[in-house]
Length: 125
Image 1 (spheres, helix red, strand yellow):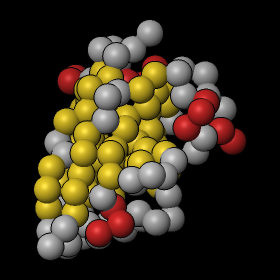
Image 2: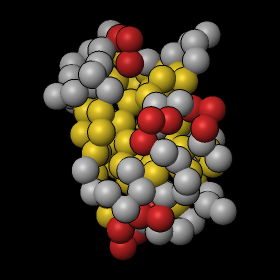
Image 3: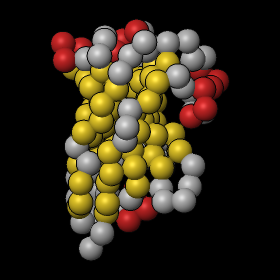
Image 4: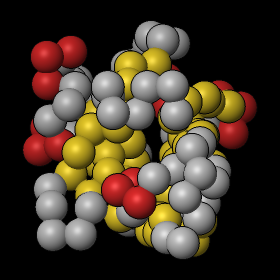
């Protein structure tokens, strides 16, 4: 079992940047760690992921070139750097983890066993 805590959300103008953190209660390399975005009145959308035991990040097409994943294994933390933020990036960002997820289900929120509480990001002028 793993507990996840997201931090780093806030208010930013279009074109601005934020870095979100997902802090885990255990080593993150044992899990697939994924960031999801939930816009108001919409479902959770896949953003970016580190597959379990694989260091290469995977990104949704909508965020390639703007968002980047990194991790600090000593701190059991995964970061989502978000640059050139757009109005449509507004919403709650969730960190999710699963120890047994197969690659074909990576983008499916319903397949993740563990979730953080989410952190709000508001992009507005």
